[in-house]
Length: 239
Image 1 (tube, one colour):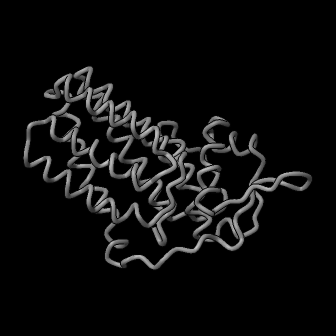
Image 2 (cartoon, one colour; image 1 turned 45 degrees about the vertical axis):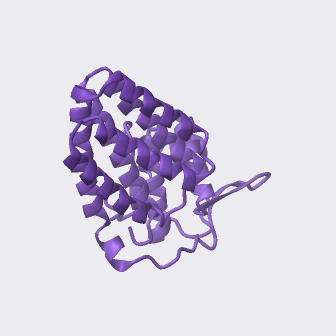
Image 3 (cartoon, one colour; image 1 turned 135 degrees about the vertical axis):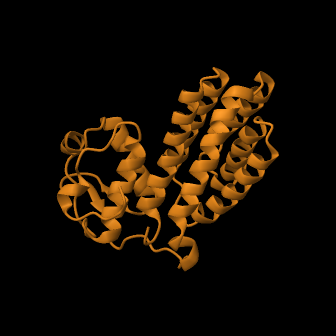
């Protein structure tokens, strides 16, 4: 997905299973921002949406809940109810033009750095270091309703994983990219469903690193980073 949706049919085309939650958030968020789903539009019924998007109902509901928390959708109960595009759509403070213009390059730089971190961590990380990172992941589970605190621990986890490589240069690069990402992430809403999905990906990364499986570790990291990119593409103003 690149945000360049051309028709309503594209909005509900099947998504890939590996990042289904994040891609669904991106797809619907982008469609709302571009006006393909106009304010007040009623979404198709859950069963139809699941069939058209090719996703499980639980995944769809998580995505719809996230978009409701972010102000993009609203649920109406009772006769004539359903899920509707918010009217008016959520307002956002004007972001820095430079920050928004270069957000995909920031994500590309992060991808290059953190895939390298995952590969080397799978080779070098000690069990003791991974125990500490697992504790951070457990802490994140308790912070799903407090994004400020969540983000601080999230950064510690990513930089901590870089530290397990023993490469000072990688730690510096990871710290720099995390700082850049913080600026971008601050521009969007942070529903608990998005944070929970992100932390589930953390768990998969750490499990693969603990197993010393470089391929699985880099694949899990790529899924995690692409998931963040999908959410940014769906929710950033002008993303």
